[in-house]
Each structure stands twice: as C-alpha cells, then as structure tokens.
Image (cartoon, rainbow, N blue to C red; front, top):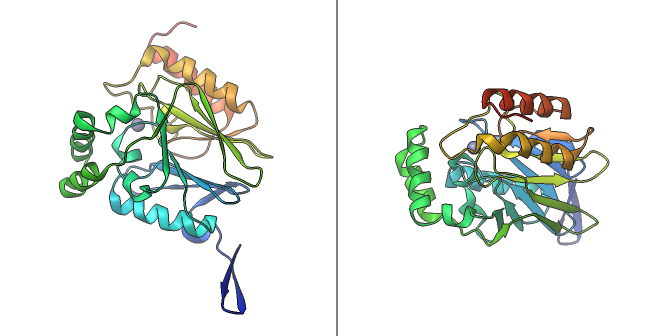
Length: 254
Ligand SMILES: [Zn+2]
C-alpha cells in the first residue's frame, strides 16, 4: 500500500504486485516473468532502499521494470544484483544507472569491452532486434561491486539480503540472492530452470554445476522458495532433482 501526499490531503493508493503483473513471493519480495525469453526479474523492498534482481533484455524492458519496481517499493531502486552475465538478464541494466550494481567476481569485465560485444552478438543471435541490442550494449552500466564469497546488503527496516557467489555452474559468474524472512526466497539465476532443461552454453562449467546447486540448497534449506531464472517457482526437492539430473547429464560423480 502506498500513501501519496498532495498538499494537505492524503490519498491512499493500493498497488498490489498482481496489479502490475508481478508475482508476490513474501512480504516485500516479488518477481515478474518477462516476455520473450521468460526471464525472471526480482524485487526486494526495504524501508528506504530496494534491490532489483536482474534487469531484462533491453533498455526499454529495464525502464519498464524500474518504473514498476519504484511503484511497488514506494521509492527508487538503490541496488541491482545481476545473477549472471547473459543478455536476457543484464542488457536492461542501464535503466538502473543510479543504483549500486553487484555481480559475481569477473562480471565487470564481461560487461565491458569485448564482453559487451559478445553480449550484443548473443542477443541478436537469440532474436533481439539488432538496434535494441546495440543501444543496450553501448549504454551498459559498470558493475561496481564484485562478490567473491558472500555480501550482506542492508535495505533498511530490518530487511537484509545475502548475495552469494555460489558458482561456477551455468556460467563462470553465478550470483544467488537469499532473502531471509518468514518465507525465505532464493533467486537462483539460471543455475535453476523450470520451464525447460537448464541451458548449458560454451561459458557453462558443467563439472561444477551440481556443487553450485548444493551450495544453493545450503543457503535456502528445505523450506525456501527457489526462484529459477526461467519458469515457475520451485521447492528444494525440485532443485535437488535438477542437481542429480545435471550430474547424470554431465557425468559428474558425487
Ligand atoms: Zn543464462
């Protein structure tokens, strides 16, 4: 619920996550599934700060996310966590240019120089309009904070969030976001996919992917909601089954 003050009058405007096409996961925590690649973008709201998780695939998509996130939070988005450097998760990042940007260690280099060009080319190969891909890649923000192990963010009002470098796995630079609370939420990036088989490209590290999922399960435990990079929210049993399937697929003995 948002309270908007105009002069002496107070208008109470109720905006729910569902009103804006988002899915509420816990108090002050939600996500939306973006069109096109069904990529998840998340939001964690604190008292005077807000964390966006991933930024969509283009400047326009990032801007739409930012507007919705601000409306839901009641204030601006102050932090952005990038779960991994793939175009559908990062090319909207410059819409959050005023935010503190976090990624797993090594992400900064991949969002600059030749890495930026590779993102652009990958986006076009996956069907993004060439002009939109170029515009977004040109404008990409810098990752200011690279996370090696774990990093605690304080968003105010008792809301703390843990950023954890749990990879490598889906890429060499996988960052998970744990939101503690009555209902715990773990944003998994593409370490977990529900809408299809986990996608392993040339930058995947298959031999270490199952261990990354063990770390993810260690973070969230049995009762957390696990939010995949693509698809419906899943539970610990699903993540464990996906870990076993990946281990079998890539011949990783445990
Ligand atoms: Zn990915």
